[in-house]
Image (cartoon, rainbow, N blue to C red; front, side):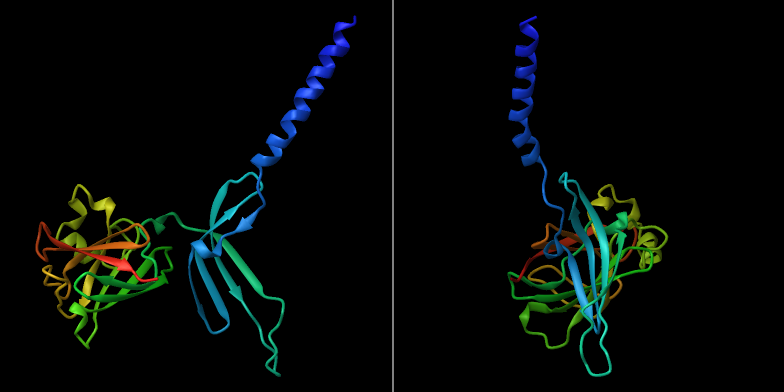
Length: 225
């Protein structure tokens, strides 16, 4: 009979020793806006694919819209309206907004827009070789080359969708002008463009404008701080 109390004591001691470990495995729920793509227009702030952790450390992603109000005297209402919806799954390969520079001095300014179908379309305004005063434009959109992609017809027409590595790029087209990045060119209007990024490095590749849309060359950019 004397063995039972000792056994219970051992169980209690073991459980007590595990409590700090259990507590350490949990985390404070938080929203990490600094890790999202965001922009503000007028009285509205929009952030896309915002990581949100729960008390167990699990991460979910939300698109968040914060709307501010102001009264007739110009005083900002301290109570904002917040709308959060789960981020669509077609956001893989999002190009971070900002300024990018290639080794030859070419600069590109990138802005993003969320389409109604959940895709994110990135718009590039570039000055080739750092000397042009007339920006040239490119545009790519996340997700597969399928219904809902803004350049589906053109990309399918030159058979970009048949490339074995098609899913490793974010696809689009040159939309205005012709320019070179170092020895890579020429990026003429309506030529297919594939983008790859790790957040700071950006590789833009140009493909032939006729089927089967073969690879031509690539240019590497670095995002400016």
